[in-house]
Length: 167
Image (cartoon, rainbow, N blue to C red):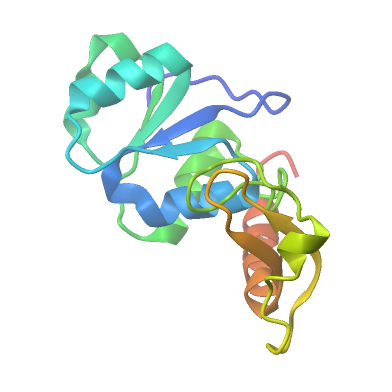
């Protein structure tokens, strides 16, 4: 990473390259505006999008750091391990891993909204562990609720948030 200022009051908008789908989902779970580059797009396309939308690129591609158009707006991850990637982003961007948990669709990055009664009626009530609040992605229509997976993920996000240097 080259000189990205830590701005704890304004979280950066992020753009992960296609190799970082798992990380992108976790960033979205934390509440960060995180796009995931689609398979097959060129590095040039990724750079153009980042510049146009004011996003920080997160990549494992060393060559990406050499592109002039994004100097100072790229984070290079040296590891495939999620825990190492989280540490790098926490150290270099000062990311808050509990910014707004579960406020975005983890699939398409759209901010979720409270589900309507008719949307809630589609939930699998017969499943144990289905708890309010219920939210829905207005783009893809996916329904979300607090279950065991949510508690486990929130615990992990809280663990990562506790590692922030300013805490």
